[in-house]
Length: 80
Image (cartoon, rainbow, N blue to C red; front, side, top):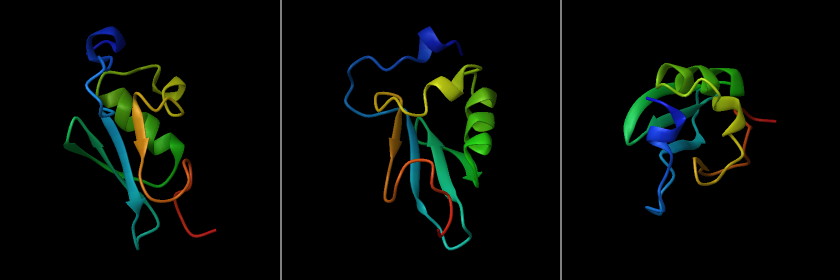
């Protein structure tokens, strides 16, 4: 899937959700409501997005129309 094909079109919800911190020091990631994996770093998140067809994913992490960070600060994956 190309970035243009998957770009959000004003539907109100970001297609990528980085969920709350888990007890396992990571964050569950969903893409279009499908489970992508447990991210322990931005590198993990970028890899999940690359596998979903977004090779320039690192540019999307701080774009709220693409990524919704739930519970906790963006880019935080464990207790600090």
